[in-house]
Structures are given as C-alpha cells and as structure tokens.
Length: 391
Image (tube, rainbow, N blue to C red; front, top):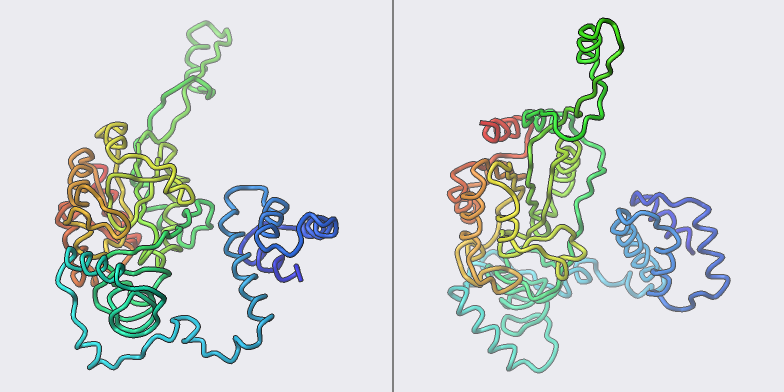
C-alpha cells in the first residue's frame, strides 16, 4: 500500500529512498500508529523528510496519494460525474442567465447583506441564488457563479470574490528550482555594483608582487576583501490566488535572484501590500513582519522589486477594509505609495502578458501608483527593469 505513497513522494521531488520506505514499514510493524491517517502522516513525514524545504512537496504528495486511496476504496465515487464532485452540483447557467445576475452594489452593501443572511440561515445549503452555500448563483458561498461576491470555503472557478472567508494556506516559492531559461539570470546580472568590503580573506596577487618588489625581493603577502555584488535587493512576492498560474516562472525568477544577489531579502504578500508582510507562508498568521518596520529597516538605496500580477478587485487597492482576507485599517494604495517614496529605485514585475494589463482596473491603478514602472516577466523586459534600477 505504501508503494503508492513512495512513488507519489518521488514524483513530487522528495528525495526518499528505499531505506526510508523500509524504515516506515518497520515503524508500522511495531504498531507505532494504527488506523489513524493523521498519525500516519506525521510518522511518514518524520521518517522520510530530512530537510524542511521538502515539507510542502511531501504534503502535496501525501494529499494526492490519500485522495487516490479514498477513491479506490469507494467505488460509488466513480458513478458520480467529475463536474459534480468538483463543484458540488454547480448549476450550469446559460449566457443569458449569467447576464441577468447583477452585483449587489458595492463593498459595504455586500458585507451588510452577508451578515444579514448569516444570521437568518440555519443550515447547509447547496444550489439556489440566495443562501450561503455551494453551487448556484448566490453571491455568498463557493463553487457557483456570481460576478461579485464573498467566497466562503475552498477555491471557486471564477476568482471573482471581493472577500474570502476561509483560512487559506499558500506555499513558499522554492529557491532551488532548476532554471528553465538562462536569459532570466543574465538579465538580472545587469543589476550589479561590485565592491570589496569586509575582512581581508582573498589572496591579492598584484599587491603581493608589488609589496615584495618594494621590499627588495623579501616575500610580503597581501590579502584583500573578497569582491562581491554590493547591491541590496528587497524582493516582495505576491502569492496565492491568481498567482498560482505563474508559480513556475516565479520560482525561476526567485532562484535566479537568490543566486545573483547575496544581499537579498524577500517577503510575501497576497494581492496587495498592506500593514504586514511575511517570510514563510506556513507561518504567515503567526510570524509576520510589520510593513512599517520594513520601511524603517532598509535604507533608501535598496532596490525594491515587487512581483505580482496586480489582478484583484479595485477595492483591495483603494478602500479601507477592502482586503480579500482581513479588515485592513489603511488602503493598499497608501502602502504602495509609502514603498515608492521610501525606495526610489522600484520595479514591479508582472508575470501576465502586457496586452492584458489594461483589461484589469486594479492593474491600471497600481501602474499609476508606481509611476508606470511595471514590466513583464520576460528577458527583454527584465533587462529594461534592471536598467531603471541602476540609473
């Protein structure tokens, strides 16, 4: 049975060997766990994972394997159409029916109506156009269709929610991904300013020859600090939601940045920058860094690179309380302006095609806030961004 888990873990890039597989079997034979999925998960992770960078890969592999086991164990699932399983009997609406569905008229009214229906509703609901539930065309719930609403629960299909009442987990971008394009790394190399700082640990051939000659041939060894890229880079990465479509190319960019810039600090945010950032997505609810502290800590000559598709509801940029996940006390636009004022050398990297930027109101708003310093995630546009940062 565990061969499926072993193969899933190997396919996900977890470096697990037959030795670890046999160790897990031995632990099960010793009855360390029995008939407990959570305990099996913990035991397998402790037995197989030797590096915390592989936790996320293992979690995804274990989830996929467990779903496969559950599906194989219950043949009734095979009789249910896949669309029904995925969207919980999502109603198929015609274009004419979709055209009749209208938004409720702004963020405040939407929140007011949500609270009212939450008080009135007494049980679970699926389908329909009013109650909080799954499927249907209600503006509240998950898996249905509505042009503007509040999602309560797992990821829907439209990505049109104004707020999401669900604790979502994102994963960190891996910095050890093999680059798919060497051009990205070459483009980042334009952002270089070499200097020799720190302790003298490198053998200085020219200095040694000169000092030895000046001392009449008596060997006089000279050392010097190692030459390194002195550029300070602050990297802010949008994660989750619509950015899930760009994980691969963003991982390539992240890996290239990690290899090129020794003085690199990275933080994550979701959709728009607000009062908190975080450096570990697993701990983003418990270990966050105030954005104001970032503004105080890093000097103005730091190069700020923001990576995000800037695709969100306009509320998230312009309104107090407009965040999709929490009631932010200040609008996202306020924080973006503060970042732009603190770090004059700023570039926003957008992984979506430039031709789509004018189709999203939030993208146009952010372009204006950063003085049109938004660039695509292509080698040519990355080079343009690096030229702006080194001026």
